[in-house]
Each structure stands twice: as C-alpha cells, then as structure tokens.
Length: 138
Image: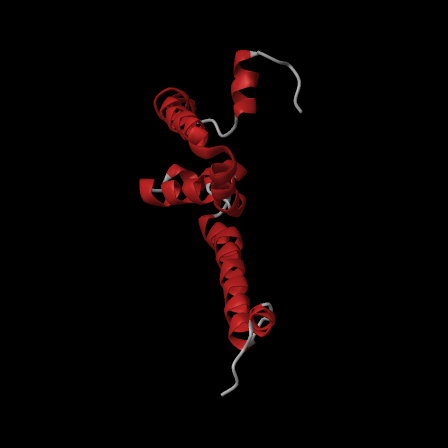
C-alpha cells in the first residue's frame, strides 16, 4: 500500500467516481420525475388545474411540507458557506442580523401572512393592485 501525500489526496478528491455519477444521475432523474408527475400527470387527472392552484398547491398542503420548503429556500448554499466567514470576519455582530431575521419572521407570521391567507393572494403585486397603491407592474 502506497503512502499518499497531501497533493495526491487533493487530486483524488477532485474527481467524480462511478458512484458519484450514479448518485448524481439518480437525483436528477428523481427530481425530474417528481416535476413531471405533479406538472403533467396529476394535472391531467384533476382536469383544469389553474396556475394559482399550481403555485400554491391547491391550498391543501400541510404545515410540515410548506415549512420545510420555506426553510430549504431560505437557507441556501451561499448562506451555509458565507455565515462562518461573516462570523469570523465581523465577530458576534452577526447576531444582530439573526435578531432581525427572527423578528421579521414573527412579523411575517402574525401580520403579513394572515392578510395573504384571508385574501387568498399569491404575490405582493396583487396586494398593490387591490389597494391601488401603484398602478404599474414591474
């Protein structure tokens, strides 16, 4: 058995092996099949699914899937890589950002989202059109 140095290990970790390709392709296929199923097959079985139903899931989804989807879209790879760097560079001042995000979450949960839910709206543009705040779209 040969002893590997750091450069050899680095080079070996930078390549995709057979198992890496298999897992990658299976993940792509499974994600595509989920989209095809809910986009085409389930839509045809429902007969006449509107765009709003497609966007909000027919307003029939439970709390856990919606929560997990929001968390997954909020916590991106960039924030996972950037947060340790921010804390290293700026120290615990990053906690001010965390406090702001948590307080914003409570404001959204108790003030903003109930209005959206009661009016059955899907975007802030619809709120602007209802209240006639601005008469243009971006």
